[in-house]
Image (cartoon, rainbow, N blue to C red):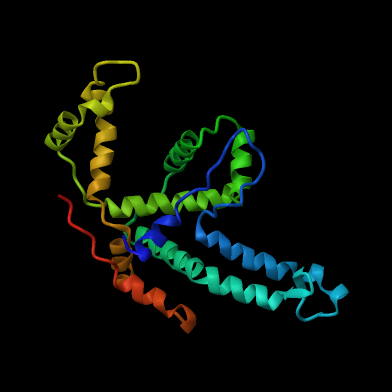
Length: 248
């Protein structure tokens, strides 16, 4: 898998979360776009570490022994390390939103509620306190989480647009994968009627347009212009997605 494909997929991942542990985990960052908020926070925070150090135009952020780390150095490093991922995600998100609008695709309140329920099930969140801890551990608010989930929903609908799944495909999938539908503690699989929607969803996902291809197609219809040459490679990678192997 190419690094470009990995980077694009990584933006949707969430940080590990333990509902029984309230401390913030910092070993993993989720959604590279959130890194951009750190740059903004650094700029906003310029006001509070400034005057006392005698650098009114370039405040201190930290020091290591006699070495001083100033705001300008910190922001420059942040832009270098995370700026590309942040801008790439912002562009990707806008392409998805514009593409969904052009195709009259929307994320309903029901879609969003289901996405939140799936997330809660995935991370074993069972009450509002755990949910708030989850938001905090990922540096999110309810609103920012809703925005991220909405873009994910729109992307999924765009990638699966026009795809059909036949009854035969569903039956064949069930016949080939019966063992995976045996409930824990049981010996026989659940009936097809009980898992039909799940199977259809899995087949839809297998047929869906790959993310990089989807974004490249959207970019052809909605011109992307990069004004900062530092990030020129974003446009190149967007317009020339990696080739994906054909499904067997």
